[in-house]
Amino acid sequence: MAEVNLTIDGRSYPVACDDGQEGRLVQLGSYVDHRMREVAIAGANNKTQALVLASLVLADEVFDLNDKLADLSQDSSSIAQVHQEKTIEFQGLSPNDEQSIVTAIGHMASKVEKLTARIQRKSVDKLSA
Image (cartoon, rainbow, N blue to C red):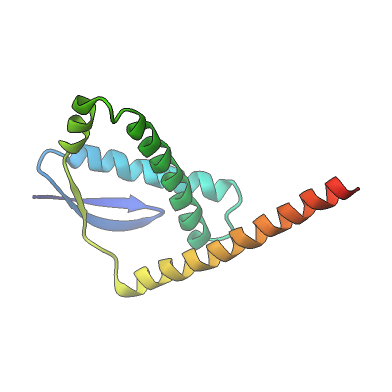
């Protein structure tokens, strides 16, 4: 089992992976770091908010890919190829970091709900006018 130190948003994270997957893991870490920077540029007010927004962007990509995979489910050979991929194990965050992220996600969810309500109110107001 190999280990790679990834730098995401200026912090180093040790991550274990299958031997030979180090390059791919570095590529994934760079992708996450890039997404973090994009979100920060787009208006995230702090690092925690950027982390949450980047997570939402990445989750959206995963959901889109899962939808596409479901469309391919009739082709069993495509599914077999997906299941043969190597696994990556995250070494974990400290309990304090995990709690900070959970709290940040909760705050972000609240903000998203408030923004959604505000957008819906404005849409109703425009329709009424």
